[in-house]
Length: 344
Image 1 (cartoon, rainbow, N blue to C red):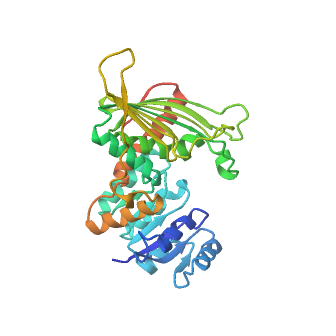
Image 2: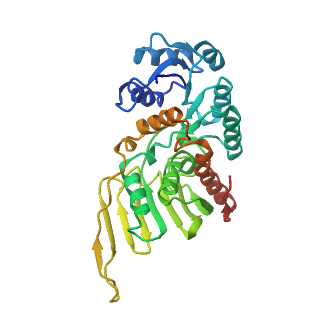
Image 3: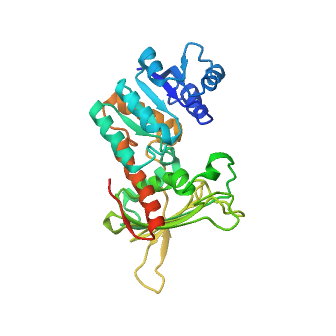
C-alpha cells in the first residue's frame, strides 16, 4: 500500500522526515507526499523544491490543504504549542497522525489528543526514535531473557555541553522537556513496567548558557520495586556522554553496562562463596529485529506497518503519554520539591 501524506511544519526538522521517506529502504515507495503546510508558505515552497515535490499542494492553511489532498496520513512536525490544533484538525479529516515529540504541551492536552484519536478511530503515534536503536533494543532483550535476574534498578548519566542557540536557550525546563523525554521513554521501554512516582531536583548550573533548567537529577519509582535514577545536564563541558546516555542496569543476578555507543559489559554471579562473589561475563544479545534499529525510519515504518495490520503501533499516544507524564511529574516535583505520583 502507498500512503498519501501531508507534512505540517516545514522547518529544519522536516528535512529528516522527508529524507527518510524518500531514501530509506524501510520506507522507499511506501509514502507519497501530497501536501506541505507551513505558517510561512515560502518555507513550505522551498522544502517542496528541495525534495522535488512539484505536484504537492502547498499552503499555510492546514484545513484547506487536507481538504484538497484527502491524505491517509498527517506528519506533524510543528512546534509543541501548535500540536493540539494540528492533530485535532487532521483527525477531523480522517487522517492517521504521527507527531514529533513531545506529544503535547501539557498532560491534559495529551489526554485530550488520546481521547480524540480514539473517538475518530484513527492512529495517533509519537516519534520516540531513541527507543528504535540497537543498544536500547539489546538491553530490552537481555532484560526479558532473565539472564540478569529480576531487574531492580536502572541508572543513566546524560552530560553534554550542547550549544544550540535559538529557542532552547530561552525555554523553561529545557532539559526535562526537550531532551529527557527520550531517555525517560527508553528507560520505561527497557524496564517494561510503568512509572509510579518521582522526586526531582532541577537546576541551572553556574556558567549555564541556558535560561532555565539545564540540569536535573530525578529518582523514579517504577512498578515491581524498580528504581530509575536519571542524572543529566546540557551545560556540562569537558566529558560528553553519548546522546543515548551511559547506562547501568542492575538485576538480582548481575549487572549490564552500556556506554551509549557500542561498548557493552555484562557480568552475572557464578559462585556462592567469598566476600565478593565470583563473576562470569555474559553476552548481550543482538536485537531480535534489525529493522527496529534505524531510529527515525524505524518509527515511521512501524507506524505504517501498524496501520496496515490494524494494530496499535509501539509509540501510540495512548501508551506514549506515560512517558510524557514522567516529564511533567518531574517538572512538578522540581517546582514543589516534593515526591509526585505519576498517573495518566
